[in-house]
Image (cartoon, rainbow, N blue to C red; front, side, top):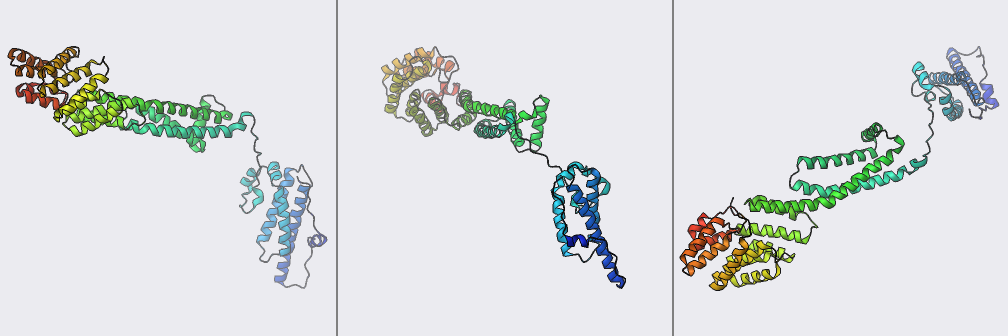
Amino acid sequence: MSETTVSLDSETASNLVTKEPPEDLTDSQQDNLTNNLEIERKFQDFAIALSALQSNPQASQEMILKALIARDYLQKALSNEDVKSVELLTKLSVLDEQLMRLGEAIATGLHLPQWRKILHPPETNWWWFFEVVKPIAKPEGWDQLDWLFNLLTILCLTGTVSFVSKIIPIIFAGGMSLFESVGLLGPSGMVALVLSSMGGGQGQKKLQEAMAKLGISPKFQSEVTFVIAFLLFTGAYFFSENLPKYYFKHYISEGERLYKDGKLPEARDNFNHALGIKDQDPTDIGKVYVGIGLLEESLGNNVEAVKSYTHALELGNYAVLNNLGRVKISQNELDAAEMYLNVGLQRVDANDINIRYQLHRNLGWVNLEKKRYAMAEMNLVQAIEFDKRIPKGNLGKGMANCFKARLYEIQEKAEKATNQWNLCLEFGKPETLNEYQSILKLNPEVGARLDSTGIFN
């Protein structure tokens, strides 16, 4: 116990001596005097018991219990007295302050919870509610760096949330598959769990239980939590860098496939989803604008088609020169069409059979409209040679035969014209509404029998 002892002055000591009441008092005065003497006796008992505690560093449980019970009796006596001595209460405050300073020693020397169950003291009797103050353990070793690991964990989780927020709109745009849902919700759940553990509560408890099952010591919780957060961060970073590119190309290929199948609204949706993904390769963005241009052209929206094709051309897609030439033919701007097509022959890849076929075919179409029949025949012959190397069913295939059939009709070569019209019917598959309308104009009977599934489906 503390070495401080209770010190009472001579006046107080004399007042705490047991006195006999005078005989000439009234009954009321006699009762008051008796009560005062009783309080003084209880005060003296408490002061003596407290002094004994202070003077004995290794006080016994009996000594501690005696002091606390003495304080109980004093409190009870005070509660029964209507008029209290200010001087006595002031000195009691001094003794109570000394008792408080012994609180931890009392809680250590006497098992107070057990005595509270026996005596049931009210909460106002605060001396029965002392507690042992547990020392705060000083972090050792790696534990001293817990603050650093917690900070790094927060930074990793912040980055993870940022990357995931970049991915979510892209995935939701095309509808999530079951695999994608699990792949997204799994890491998101881990992020929520780790964030919850940082704030304590059930999240922390669940994470601690999971670590315990894995045989991980509690002292390494901060380090393991950081490792989990770092793995989530690196995974989110990887997917944020690669998923947009993957979905961008997926939307392009899906749009092109749907376009070839004649499912134009679905193709449009995919191309629009692709355009919604930012920071992609300009060459690939050009492909998207080509796809949208083809859609518009197939529907006869030539103005919108030209806008999309022009965007593609600005992004370095020279194959779109053929498309621009084709639209200009339908708009009866033959000089502009011829310019686009000739530039296209100079700029496109010489090994791209399909595009070179279309360029020669459309130049044959232009020359046919301009009544330059020799040049038209030369272009159409070259186009047909390329067309022989293109698989049946491809959009635009067989159209050179249709134009050549009309050329033979103009040249009054009936047998050759019939042969070309038959080839036109067998292989012809117009790619756009403009092409289809041109054949209807040249030969309504053949045009009505052409495979138009590339336009209408």
